[in-house]
Image 1 (cartoon, one colour):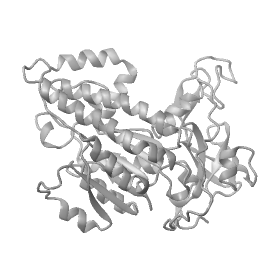
Image 2: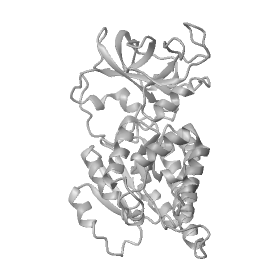
Image 3: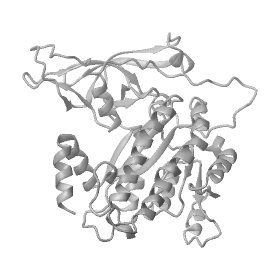
Length: 415
């Protein structure tokens, strides 16, 4: 039975410090189909279009009928744990540092047998639920947990290695004046976050929600202006070693055509906050987070960027904003590779238009700030890399995968 996760103890500076080491990362190109599914929180395997058999490991041809038509398809995620073992002295350095480590063979109900990491409560010959997770190297692996939930299920040591659950972790929310900040703080406290830091630019200005943050307990407002390199570096010097999860919720929205005479200044401001602001945060905090990626239970876990789906598909009347979001998304992908060297996860949360003042003129459906906050916390708990929030974001993403040129022409017709 898994034990409840206790609050982290202060680290003894005289004890050995674990260095950052990643799990084995070699994969074939076909295996990265599973990586894509794991990044989005899906359980999917190759499935033959001719005979209908699921295939694993990833192959170029169906092992039953030799058909080359093996697209990825959502699969039943249940099975039976056929056998299990606890590895006491693993040969790989990453697992040796974290031994003992449980693994087992799971016979999936859809056919294949997979080698899976195991939750503490999994029993041999019992039914299990299997998920595709991303390990510290960013590669897809299988993780099995009991079908029946149990107390402290999410506190499993191996499960936490494959996710970034905020429980007992300290979190920095970059922009306290954002409509997402208060729902995020409430959700993080409910999820068990140990301490929350709220960034405030120009803290001398009136801040109506200060009392609501303080009422939560364990919340500290700190000075942070993403347009000021000194502000970001000073905060990182003071709080960088205390932050395990950073949530970048910076935004700047101004509607208007890119052909408007006054479009240049809002475009510059959007780039300054969304792109160069993220770059300043990255240079200040990312090296500290990356160095602490293996620092035990209190190690750095994740970086979250809250972005707009308009960074993937430009919105009519929001050309400069869409361009800034696209640049921020591209920068986020570069940051993911940098943080990944330290085993720190990067989660992009792409939302449709939200129920905020700058999207008033856009038609429904819109996304409530609380829905975005809930998606962030769920994505951290599940160890995801990409989350799409709201009907607009999910629809645009699906259509972009199917036919990006059709989406481009349809969006242009709405202008």
